[in-house]
Image 1 (tube, rainbow, N blue to C red):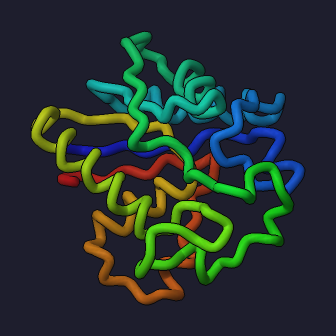
Image 2: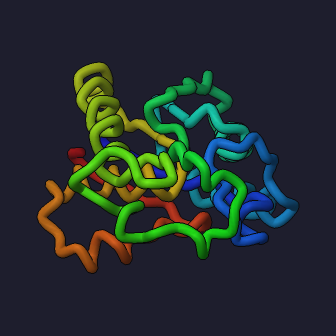
Image 3: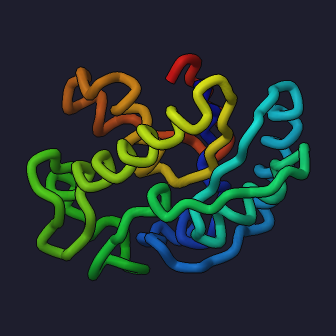
Amino acid sequence: MNLIVIRNTEAPSNVNYIVGGRSEESLTERGIMQAKELRKKLEQMNYDVIITSPVNRAVETAKIINYKNISIIKDERITERDSGDLLLKDRNLVNKTEWNSMKKLRTRDNAETLLALVNRTNEFIKEIRKKYENKTVLIVTHNSICRALWMIKNEKEKSKEEINSFYHNSEDIKVYNNY
């Protein structure tokens, strides 16, 4: 299976530097323009299936980039991180050590950790590998899930610094062949 991964484009939480989590915010005007630019890039690629997080900003991104006009599948397992008590709060309040923990499932703020994200993302990947074995799957999701996908593909054999520094820009398309 080949995997094309796109992060949702800009939403107000990105601009305001707050934890967007699973809030149902819409894309900003810039986010809409970013999605249109991604669509142009994506038109040079082929995909068979498109799966998105059910969070509104991801769904909006998926609809804009879907140049094939195929049915979009929503999957809870690639939804944004449950940010617990940090939802819509200043991102500077996030304890990055706990947030990126690979030892426990929840932070003191009741947010999902990176381990929790990797676990649920891995279940999703196992299923779609079987279901779409010889296909190209386009996923529209969030930075935290992009990080989990990257870690799973790289079998988590990266240093803590590499893992913590991985960031999927809203204007990038990541392609993983033979995922």
